[in-house]
Image (cartoon, rainbow, N blue to C red):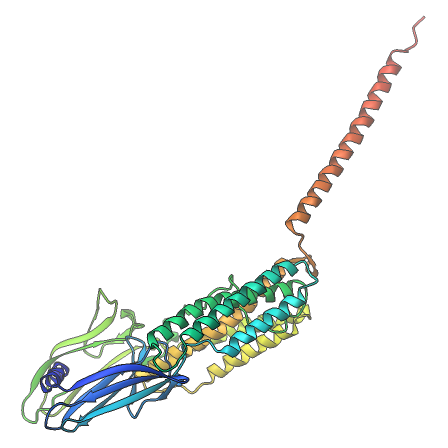
Length: 441
């Protein structure tokens, strides 16, 4: 019943059952320590609940230490929880082990470093040689900075987890610059007509992933949110208010049937809420409200199909050029990845795990779209350098353009001068002939 949670919290406070959490670091992992203690002389129950860091996904959880795993729909984070019974004066420690996701792997940095050197050597005989050398030197310094930063805040005894995570956030920003520099080098190689071999960098002009795929109202699936109110009393009828916040994706027009509840929107949080005052529940029975809404989570299918069509069209463009075989392979890999995501087994019951699954799936689709947008942006840049449809003929540089303009102007000036001299010569001859006209008589 509403209010029961507050009573439970009050009971815990009165009994002085306490929880404490801490974070420590070990080789290759971060350990969230949750300590529960009962200072009283009799056994007591306590509810453990501890949120995991925001970047953590299900694949990053190495061990929950026997605790249950939950998902907070509102905060978009996972948490561990369980109600346990502590004996008199008992203390228990739970160590939740997480994969250390707050470090850029050395192998990844080495890959970008070596690839930049390879790309620069392939541009050594081109007009982009000087630019490529500058990019390669700059990203090498950036990678050195990341390595130094991560070494200083590496996981070791006595290390600060907060400093370790902050160093990672800084390294991410630097690594983004490295990726863009490598993407620029790859584009320069493509601009010379060479197959880049692979595309692992980013480009600045590539658009971000977009999730705003428009669906018609009838194209949405519908799901049921069940809200249950139970009266534990064996003899007394009870009345209590019912209130439930809906997930942030749900808008008022998504609620197709409130199941007898009222609907309102919190003006501060922008969250839809269903509620009802004074719901009467018979003794030892439950009242269930079925709220039918549009499924705002299982909507990745149309987006996946649209991305697959884009990838297929780009494959057709690449096939015509017959020069960027590895780019075509990358596009085929993207299509395979999209099909794999589309074929994932999906949850069938609407609950916290259902929402978490489709949110994580949307992030996986985002990652594929980033790769697709990167290739699309590069091909558009290549098309702009083409002349009359032939990729081997690049558009002239600004310097060359001005030289051509000056040559044309000089040619026009020469022609104008020759025309003037010819006209002036004919005019003089006509005047001379006019002075020698024969006299009459």
